[in-house]
Image 1 (spheres, chains in turn purple, green):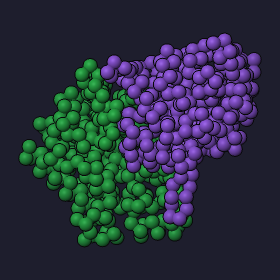
Image 2: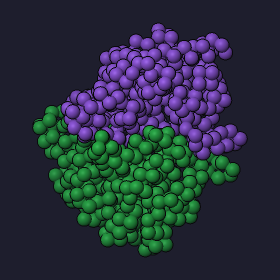
Image 3: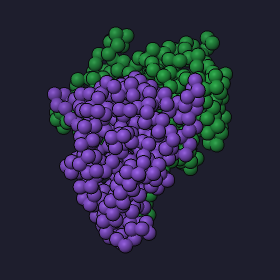
Image 4: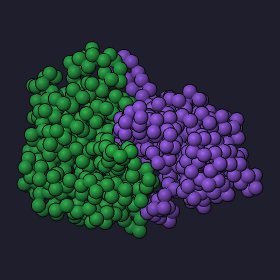
Length: 308
Length: 308
């Protein structure tokens, strides 16, 4: 799957991913009103609003981008109808030939991680039949439980040609509380990064591994070190835009070949119409505002990479 | 919610929790056949088999136990129908007045953790209405992202009188890979345990905090240390039975008051009918076998606590 991601990044010239994290307050009133008119102010109504919102953003941006990253929590909060909207979004993005990174941050003991892996990137057996329940292309994984919690995900990646992004250094302000603590003089995130490189060796694509890492845009100096520790790992970089990361902060997440990183923006793209900068589009044309924000993000990152 | 858990433990004399982790291969053939006859060998068929299996085990054990712990991965692997069976199981256990610990091991950056917390132990707003989408009583949380990933869960616990069990030292063989690494001479899990004590102070019940910890039965010496570091935290102890933990290993997880820990068994209870020891019940009477296994587990732990 990393080969497809690399080829789509080359084709679009856009090492970016759009985070489909649809909070209800981001969704324009006309979409919410239509959904509530049909389903009432219910979980089903919320799920329908999310789906219509996502569909428009995907329709207006899919030709510019290689990948999307739906954050499952934003769907799971609306219960079963919300999760059905997650599934529908994944399916639709795959129809549009986008690479889908399920931001699920799962991770458990071996047999339990195996169940998550089967459900999200693999297949489950029911009697004589097998199914691909969620069928994302990549998922994010939490490494706190160690190798035997991660191995079942890797095994499924090998079997199904899928991929992972493992949390190494997250973008949030208190990520350092545990991740930065020194062990034999080196921060924990470096040890996790070394493990990612080791795990990744067993699941290589052409040039890059199917096992990547998450490193926040908000910690560029750490990104530079981790880039060297995991030379074959693609880095998924959250924290651009709304969380404070800028294009110039990101250059060290990339290798000399201009590859090796994919930068996520969620709010900055999907709620672009709420920014003064894109106010000219108006709420009704929120999809066009998202398209303009994608174009600006691509230009920002391209410019930063050219000027490094 | 910790007050309810303590009161139910006192009332039943059973500091145990039954892990409802229904793998299809644990489910007796007659249940699977009936479900597949109705829904085919589909995700819906698998979900129906899980639900019927769970219902029988709950019906046969609910009067003996204070709590259940459904592991969401075992449902999530069957996609939306599987998650609907999770929800149905949670609802049914609450009807039976059991405390429900959702073993979800979520954890993310602040706004995303807030969505998970709302969906699982809190409420979401849709227009003027609010809903309790999954409505568990406790959930398990992964601490790798630090305080700002945990705080939104604590906030919801304060508002909704719910509780958490935060992963401190997990039961799996490679949990030590990161959790045991020394930081200023002390293992990471101790630092996480200190944080649990600190977080717990803001969400106290009577005597114990609503913020508990997960510490594996497979690491009794570490349990003894962690018991002292987090005197007010209830410890959820997985790893009893199938994973190798025995009653005698568990005594140091408890305080002198005989409280402070709740021991989980999953396979050992729900698939008891497959053990030679309970073979006399036969596959059809799997619920009775589970009841006998619960009685034996209670006696094992009670005996160990009396002999300490």
